[in-house]
Image (cartoon, rainbow, N blue to C red):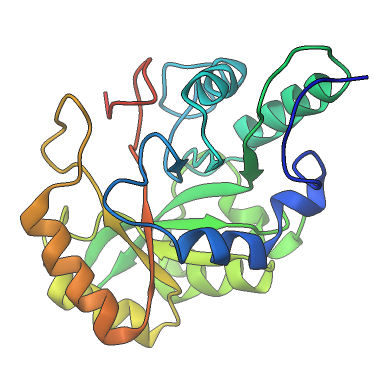
Amino acid sequence: MALYTASAFAFTPLASQDRLAIKQAWQTIGPDSCPHVYNFHMHTTSSDGKLQPEEVMEQAVQIGLKGMAITDHHTVRGYYAAQDWLNRMICSDHPFTLPHLWTGIEITAQLLGTDVHILGYAFDPTDPRLAPYLQGSAPTGELAEAGRVIGAIQQAGGLVVLAHPERYRVSGEQLIPAAVELGIDGVETYYAYRSTNPWQPTPDATERVKALSDRYGLFNTCGTDTHGTNLLLRM
């Protein structure tokens, strides 16, 4: 019998699409949630990261993450590999505490005439409406419109978050209300814009984004946006 502990549904596809569970997790998110409790923004070798999906999962276990999502650009290959890893662990005798893994993706979209990154979570990756966004490259034309991207993720059962809203040519003060009009569910409130070591959310940007999130009743998320070899850092 395996010696791991985890939530009862942490190893099934349905768990990866559990909207209620991820909403409950997001309701607890604060400035200290990431990177040791939750991490909802990271990349693997399936897009532009340096860690194999299996290495991401091993680090997540070592860190003790409760919940996470791999958000590769325009692909869910990393998610599938990570889910396979979790499934293998269910049959092992290792005394791991395993995190809850949700489906995740990062899609480049156009909002107010600028490129932004849209994060999707807890969606059905087999939904055909998402297929144009799972081809490994950024969408173009009408498919790149933020409203189309948000709609596709939500129609696939997912929740949508505007990534690092203070990182674009257009300010978060302009982008967040525009995203709200399109039906966005949350914003990546806690983010290390200065890529610090140790990782910590940038205070001034966090304050601005949190105020807007509160104004519009959005979920707050956090993530390291890891592209390197350490889940505790951005690079």
